[in-house]
Amino acid sequence: MDSERQVLTFAIWWHDAVHDPVAKDNEALSAEMARRDLRDFDVSIHAREEIARLIRLTAKHEVEEEDRLGEILVSIDLAILGAGPDAYDAYARAMREEYAHVSEEGWQLGRSAVLKSFLAARFIYPDPALRQRFEVQARENLCREIAGLS
Image 1 (cartoon, one colour):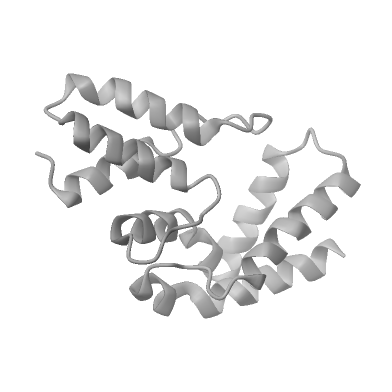
Image 2: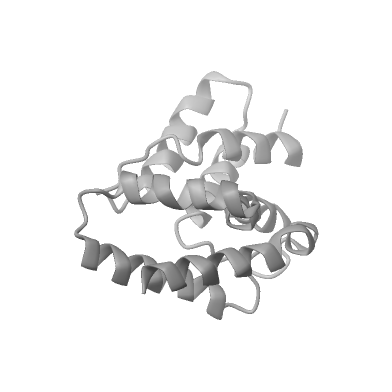
């Protein structure tokens, strides 16, 4: 039961299991939850460690070259950035609501910085197939949101 597909599936299921907008350790806590919960399934300790590692990658969206499962998970995690304009705009509004505790000025500065960091990267999606599908639209969406934040 420790196939790459199953490892990736479990990482997808658990990667946002813990989500608190004011916390800085959501991914680490989600990884620990997966490691603990998956003991009850037929998942080896090696697979549980790999699942936890993959989940932790979604904290910074940084993946080593040739980490195929990491590339796929991080790209899936960022897929919304490459959604059509209406879906992306709904996501951006939901993000603002989720971070309602942040002042408008703080939101504009912080959100712009995050979006600009994605734009500054050589590519947003480390997985080549997802990059081909989403990269152009994601960059358009990010630029449009940044312009609206200014």
